[in-house]
Image (cartoon, rainbow, N blue to C red; front, side, top):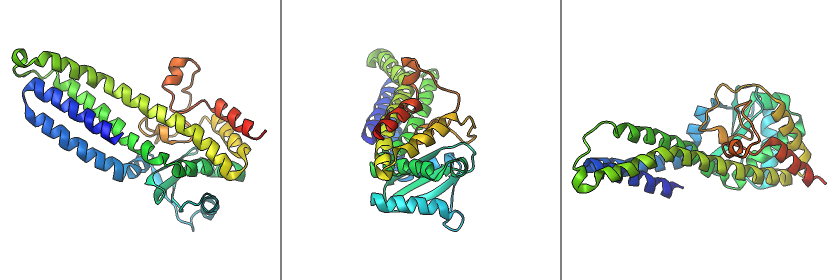
Length: 281
């Protein structure tokens, strides 16, 4: 994904530098893509936690939370992640980080207060499964890259209206610029679809892995029922981080048509519950 991002940004830079006869645009694109790849790898978790308003919590502040995660980590053979709380009454949680040794779990205050022990354990096992399955790096990097692609697409589109197209007739600048504009228009859509596809696929796997970890699929199924019935809004929710959560933090945005499902950040909760309860049979 990082390599594709690098190639795509450099391609856009080359298109516009060719069309405008300005090689500095290409140099900027190369430098920018390298810097953003580095930031995405090393700091995507911190960015995601900050955007979500997550605050670190100590063992003394919430020993119940720590004990549940510690017991699951021992069972899964994983190091203890950094633990965070999001001050929201919505029931939700997410995991982030670049590897199991540098990972974090954030849960909302609503999850800690509204879920029963087995339900919260199921949610935490789901998030630990994201860590164990190495989903967290991909899903965290997507937070940064999808946002950057959308920002650059807007920037390139604005450039197309500035004038100064260079030697268009001799260098085919008009055609190259048209290709660049198409790429800039489609880039945010492609980034969004990749973001959502990655999320949906990994959620099913984390549901199954988490249930194997607790040996009690009903716990997570019951938690998902409560999450589905929860209409509380999360004020710190962002489109860029929505795919990280165990369930879509934006309430009231669901549908059953194929087109609506294409743009859903998560699989339908009803389908996830049905699969989990099928595991209990």
